[in-house]
Length: 274
Image (cartoon, rainbow, N blue to C red; front, side):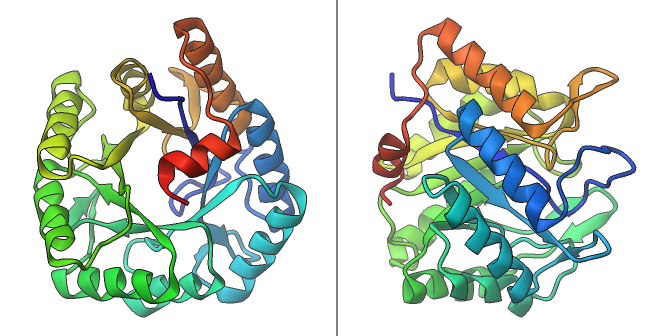
């Protein structure tokens, strides 16, 4: 079975210090967390940044500060920048940090109800962002929240608007408004992706209570796994996780017990075509 890539979504745009006191917000906190998670087995860092007040921001200077410090402190970690921002962020601001040339960045596959809000990703904006990925030469990580988004992304691949090979697709399951992380949903998503984009690799981010069940499924199915405070703040029901690294360590232990090796930095780059 292919070595396992663990991605850490360490901060996100929605989680607060009030709900998770150990949330890394400042650049130094994020770098310290990245080092801990890399040592625990994570190879990809899914990056959102916050301003001095702890609010989500797409500010280029803040992204640049964090990325510079990350590359100095943990150079083997793959930086995967979010273009999602916070719900409602203007699309031009969401695109702008790609200028900083991270290893990867997210490309959302469609619009969905996101809790009480609407996460807008119009076809015109998606195609514009997909074209910009090609201009700057950054590898996209496609985020899909339900199966119809796979069909849409497959059309963009056929049109040549998405050309990176192999394409990495992240199933984000359990968002209120999207597909849940039920086993039958994961099986369907993986099979559907294989039918539509046979060369693609995939991983899963289970939101909230779905984080661990989705991780177990991905571990046994050959997919990759994302964990972190963006997706889930608990270690057990009602028990807050001590750190992002604690969530990574649990997946690493599970993988070792299962006999699936954790990908080295070199293997991770090979699998993702970086």
